[in-house]
Amino acid sequence: MTLTGAYTGVHDPSAMCQRSDGTWYLFSTAVGVAIRTSKDRMCVTSRFSIHIGAQLEVYSNWTNAGVVWPNGAPWTRTYTGEDNANLWAPDCTFVNGQFYLYYSASTFGSRNSGIFLARSSTGVSGSWTNDGLVYGSTTSSSYNAIDPGLIIDNGQWYLVFGSWSSGIALLRLNPSTGKPSSTSLTALASRSNGIEAPVIIKEGSYYYLFTSWDTCCAGLSSTYNIRVGRSSSITGTYVDQAGVSLKSGGGTLILSTHGSIVGPGGQSVFKTGGVVYLVYHYYTSSGFNLAVNKLDFSTGWPRPY
Image 1 (cartoon, rainbow, N blue to C red):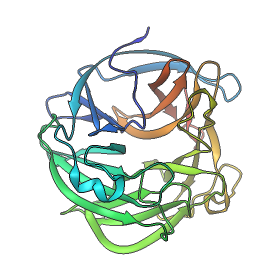
Image 2: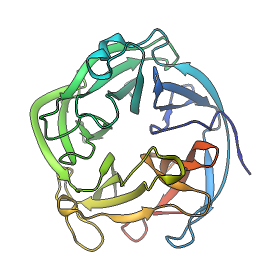
Image 3: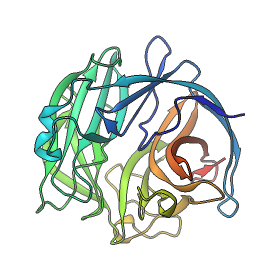
């Protein structure tokens, strides 16, 4: 089977959020932050091997539903240099009857970046409230304020973020505001040759930190691949399957280029119906597209299938 509807042109997909009426929402990098909706979400069956790759058999019907900011987002101009620029790597969580959308504003290769928060009770285009800047970085900052990912753990809110530079960091948030409760950052992962797009999920006794390595955004020359480490504490230390700390360049490979699927990455992870899903983009000769795999944690380490 194949995807139908608006699944092409999806870059840096968010986790899929389900509204209380059952509608599924997906957000992605675009001018104004792109919105797609689905009634049946995306169901996936596939076979996976590190060596032969994943053969996806998917079905879903997605619809373009406009953008979060149809009139532009001039408050991000400090970081983008224009009023209606691409806004990157949104992260969606539906909690307490509201969508919480963290997204980043920057220019390619810059550390002059900002993470912003938007909220909506419906998720539809134009319904969003600008809750302003969450965290900003400059050219002298250790961590680049892009690629945010919210995790709620036993009532505590945390934001994981970062790209290249010093790597990946964790910031504690105030649940009542969605903004930082402290300026203190916890280092989680580092690598000299590219690490970004962090997302954390707890499964069983462990927290799993997923990241994208190497180079994105180069079409069929993209070398993106998805790695993971785990920890018994949300603040680390995260290690890979060989026991190497992610702060020392560790990371177990779970998905890379295979067949016509080039440079998978920019991932999000979410759980529904007892199943964990990996959501990501990949490149083909015709552009970039949305893909999903189920994740099997039966060995203690996630494996797409």
